[in-house]
Length: 629
Image 1 (cartoon, rainbow, N blue to C red):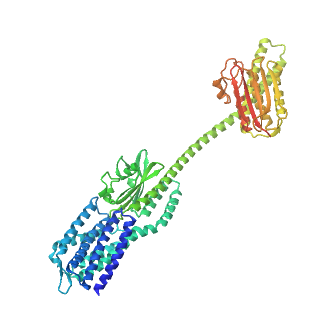
Image 2: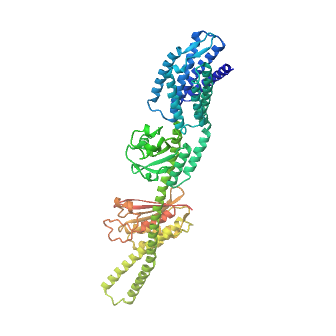
């Protein structure tokens, strides 16, 4: 009965183990865990193949050489599986060194050669055709070999049980070791057959658990990982304050990778500063790393993620934190990159006896790091924008205060200066009427000077008031004929025409459309332009005011003169307030420097265009275009 069970179990194990071996090697043969797992499965296949042939020898009488080959194959698989299981366990708990892999395969090769030589002489075939094994008590070296490797396997499983992903793997390996120990209870083939059954079932159980943890579970979690990424993105980017964003990133990283601690370093003033911690001592916050210190500096420099299975064993440089070597186990550090620039790094930390991070965890942290870098940059930009807005608001308040002071000055100008000025001018007129025969020529000359200065002051005040009304007041648009606007402008300037010093020519094209304007303000703008033309044109010159069709749906007004012109260096500033060019031949011309500024403001309010051409000594032409009604 036992022989039949062994044959069935061995056959089933051969088929399943071969299938699992192909799946693991096809999925990712470069991963160390898969490499050691593949070697373990291969040796279990050899063990079960030899056991199947050996059990078949009990049913069908085979030649003695074939029996010896079958038993030797079975014992080679038995011994090799013990070494491979130990190697697989070291990978599961992260106990191997850099050269461990080469040493294990070399040791496995030596053990298999030695075991083959021993097995060829340890098999006896009885007269009735049964197969017996040599008593293991006569092979103390082999017994010590099993005790060492199986004992270390059990020790590693117990000590690193928290680092292994599932409890099924721990149970399967433990049962496999116990099953191998059954073969030493009795050296006959029946005891070895029972050991084969137990170990085969344990190997299959372990294989399915590893397959589920390494392949099936990650594949089934792909969709949930996408959803988790979405949730992480929302949790991070929904925050505004940078401190809150960093705390959310640390919490999500610890939760996502099941890490004991998290640290976030950001570049501040050219140095890496620990800005946020999760389950790390608070006194390390704001601690800065020197150049080249820790894996964080290396990650930021290379902009490549790093993974250490054991921080104390695998990192030979300066520690990232004073407690790192004593408390850090498995560690992953990923750069926080925004655009082409690293702005910091994110580190997740497992305890000394905690879980082992793998390459899939590295990819997840890199994905989280990319989301976190965007969120951190957005929060930083938002904070900068808020600071700038506050500064702007402060500047606006200052501008408002200046505007209030300006308005107060305009009010003072219109009331406190204009009223006494008009009173002085009225009293001067009365003085001229009351003292026609008393005053002499010098007195008359003095009163003329006073009157001219009062008129000048009056023009300045009127210019300030007109400019402020144009800037602050609302326009009253109406449809106005261009000819009417020109005629009223001419009437306002009648005193210049009557002087006869300069000839005034007017030209209005027929059929011009109506224009949309505030009649009083636009008339004031044209009057200022024509007044300037009269002032800066010498006696005998010509001033022209033309109205014609402009570009598009506009009407153009042109004020030309044959005056002194505007110097090239002064032309960029002619529309500035209170600007007056220092030009030879214009010393006698008085003015406030507000006329052209008023013209510019009025035309801008009318959504029109204003420009000029001028040449020193040849004259100036100003062009005004306003939209049709």
